[in-house]
Image (tube, rainbow, N blue to C red; front, side, top):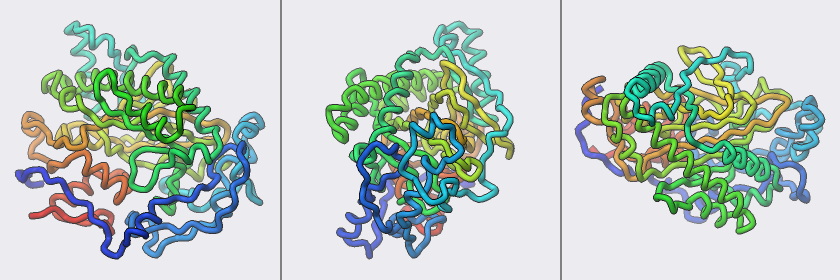
Length: 456
């Protein structure tokens, strides 16, 4: 691959010429369906059909003609389709997907045979990194930590951190708030609805963005802007969308964001030393980060072998800090073999994303991973995605290019990649390569992008 010498460009996302203002407004609105919600609210009148909008979602798995999704599909399964789920769980989560055949999974949620998951996979043994040891400054401890992290990140990009300084009582409060939020009536959750192209808010299965391979989950994504001790972006967002009655939730989410971001800065110091640049290099790069906290809620499924909570992908972000509850389901692919990283008490799973892979010039790997579901238990996770400031230029330092020549990735901003993955390209195992080909060669993303190629 040739060297990249051109200055960074803020690439322009173009609208389709045939997309009028009224159509764009219509396309940004998603019907308020009673999807995935426990049956605790009055019945919402059925919606006869939902028209998918291919002009704004040029993914390879989305019909070019648009697809109608009828009410039967939208109300037939997820939680109440679980006829085999134990009575305690079913009583708690019963409700909005009742259909004539409770064990049937709608076709849009069924994944291809070569992508379907399984709980029966071996455990991946990843290093457990003691952050307190690293922060102590003792030379032998620092050398051991950086060596273990370097080995893991060159091989697959995953490790676990312990003795990290995050109060686990705070994480317990986070999971309690998650239980409360995801158990609320749909009309309440929909007040924070994540519209097409937006990065934050409540989403369920992304069935308007995608027409097939739908994920079996609900999510709530919150902005986490690093603005010093007084940062309140997560709190402010939640109150703006849901009202002051959610002030406790907002405070818990904000406190968690602050604590996990602080942990992230320590991890970036480890990564700086493990890569042979200065300890402060990456910490300084991410000091003004525009990060994301995503709360994931995976309901049980009567046919878990047919679905995935999250499909195989590499994170387009930089560093992911994952906190799991006590239910297994996180799996990674190493050398074409799937492995599980089960939850362990008082720990976080760390993985490298595509953006940080770019910053290392490919020295560290961004590994494929997925989430599987089960037939008995809800699974909950908190994923904190450390991201650069939107306008920060992502470019590997020269000393890392010299270690792994030539320069493998073009300059870009995080804001550019984020917009692409929200509007034009479903993140997968080749997101970074697709971005590179688009910038370098003007190659369309997924052969249907509405994004303009960069100027020569």
